[in-house]
Length: 499
Ligand code: SF4
Ligand code: SF4
Image 1 (cartoon, rainbow, N blue to C red):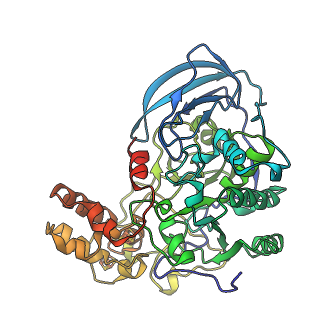
Image 2 (image 1 turned 30 degrees about the vertical axis):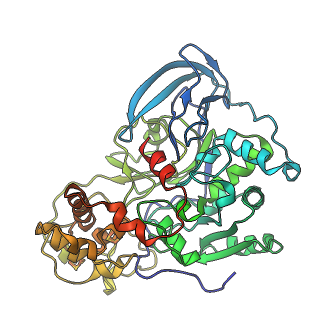
Image 3 (image 1 turned 90 degrees about the horizontal axis):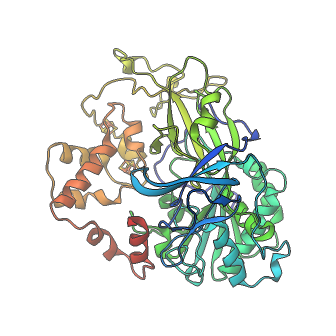
């Protein structure tokens, strides 16, 4: 491992935010009813294999389809199927299976799983990963010969596993790797290496997690195919678009997937779940989710069955007298969770609750205060010992003219000039200049909007500019793809995204 933490130009470190989840892991009660979307994680929707009135066991496959890019979905509790219907799920039409539970917590394991997994052939390992549903995790899915990703395992040149934690609120690697899970992570990496033998494996962790880095380095000492990286936890380092250039010194076409250049990116939890699937026969029934943010009474981690309604886990944990806004996975760019009857699914990692604060504050920019986060380098913006930064939904000020401070340009991780793009789009000058200013390179991290002292929603203007260019007939793909050779699985990726 290199001693010096790797990083990229631009970005921003969120430090000392109130409401970080404690290193506590609780197990949520088995829910009385679950709603299971048949499209979760990477890939398309499978065929529904159950019908109302049918008895199911936790761990039973209720949906699969080997003809499209997808992975099986399982019943997460035992009980009776109450209803199967189409719903609007995160703006996509999706089949949802509702199960009334019988209260039991056991589940059926995958046959053929083996604690001595080293004796299994790669095909058998891939089958176990596919049958467990773990193959749907993260942005590319895990390649297997069962059509769970857009590329074949033999095409994979690099695997990046990360737990960098560069968001304002992060799931704790300490919690994910507690107990035997550190060893299970290493075993999970060995399994992935066996099914993707041509790939170099990179494990990237935050440079702040020195103890974990030390322990992993000791465990990895004889694994010459594994490289451990210490990365600065600077936002948006956890984005695939930043991990690839920071670690591999490569790029992939923005708007596409790292799989298109033969790279698979997974998080720590996914790799631990690969081990559990293969060696313990555990299907993907639950997620460890971090409950973060100042609106929770006690921010912490919760192990929860997939399909559990959000209201079951968040409502009892909100501080009295607070009206919260819930955001999924990322504070700057995550989805706002408006409907708490929605279920937890395979992609949940953080549920963030921040207090609603609609009050208008007169001349807010003149009194930033010690508890408000700020990009500026003034004394007041610094992090003082014992003083935590807080956040609410308030912008703390109104949109004002651009003061050409250059903060947005300085912070942009892909080196484009947000204030210039904003001025063109606002002036309705929609032409090739926007393409010359690399408007399609924006990775939608939202950092420019966050750091702007004039509260200009720059990322929104950039998105608007991209949309207007498309309406004028500009083909985004033609602006991006000609700069890359030997791309893999592009058509499959489009198909998997559009389904
Ligand atoms: S949203 Fe786009 S333009 Fe703004 S900082 Fe991120 S990458 Fe740069
Ligand atoms: S950060 Fe805001 S005020 Fe500063 S240059 Fe960018 S758009 Fe203008």
